[in-house]
Image (cartoon, one colour):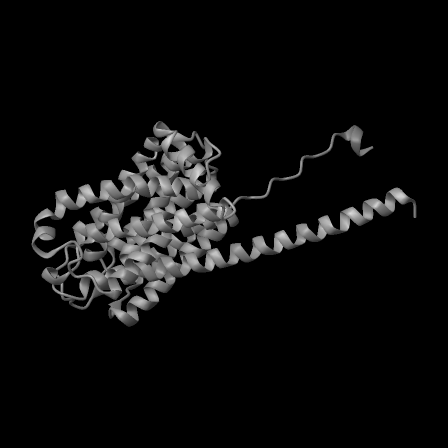
Length: 350
């Protein structure tokens, strides 16, 4: 074997081995992030439901304070991830935060729009969870796919293929079917307003769609990492959330305290909700839309099954049909037909 070939083989083998290791790590991260997101979606829906219906209203924790604490936990996690990105070097870490947040105030303020919307969205989700059964809440909230698609077309000028628009039709039909179903739940400790719960979920869907697309536009328009953007989001979301507490629950906070009704279960809810946004970022980075659809669909199924066990939820045929349509729409929306190979010119065939 010539010397040049030997040198090439010696260099190529380690490089190929390193590539295989990277692919293996990527697959592992993809699997772990998808499984974790599936569990997080299903567990959060049921946990929020139980947290808001396990005691009389006057004994419940304030949802507005829980949203603020979720953002605080998310900030700590995001700061740690940025620290890891900078190689655990304190000087580089401080410089990165200073250069991104302090020296670029206009860029940081741009993130204030989704920060405000996410705070409002999370408060609406608490309101929805307090007035809907877990399964209906989970399925209705899937309308965020429709609002995200609409804003993607309007803001990002993104084109959707026929199967994706068909999936949106299936989605609307599924959610409407669920609302028309006779699904009932045994009496709980807190009075519920089904219409209010549905309206809150729909409003959260609109905010989720716009905030997500706006944040995507900001993220793709610069080389700032996802974790640093999450730091910016939380830095701005916390004061906005505190303002929401003052406006919405000032008298309750002054009378009972900021952490009224908190226990270890509420702390668990706060941490679980904080992990949600970071998990989505991981799935987007290491997986794709089809696999994310699997995760979301499985979360709906698990929520329905667990609702039967935990909340004595009675599922009717219409509810099953509506849930099936929603799940099918998620798969169909993520489906990308493979491009047909172009036919070779006759001269090339010959």
